[in-house]
Image 1 (cartoon, rainbow, N blue to C red):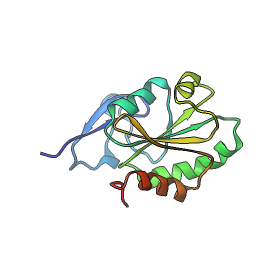
Image 2 (tube, helix red, strand yellow):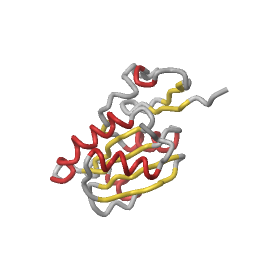
Image 3 (cartoon, rainbow, N blue to C red):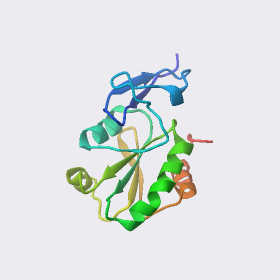
Length: 149
């Protein structure tokens, strides 16, 4: 029997079980009824961030940003485009380093934007600086060869 995917809702933090045969793009959260994958990376709080990293069995890409950061704002449309290409095989979320200073400090964030890839609860890779959508997708696929088109 194939393993079910555990997908954490980026809106409420609810953990959802998705059978492999189910179309993940149509799936809704059992707790809040929002779509689990929308192609729009949610800006999460510390609790939802921790649940994404520790409870989901999907790879998670985190964009650490701040509202005053020009390169962060410039990268936002590219990050959203990357989410539209990578979801539902990979979860993309955003973390506002101004609002979530404790998490940013715990992650050792020294510059923004910083993008971190987690899988299996562990950091796999990180890169600082703005990227295009194509660069984000290639970076993820370079570190997770099982994520293909």
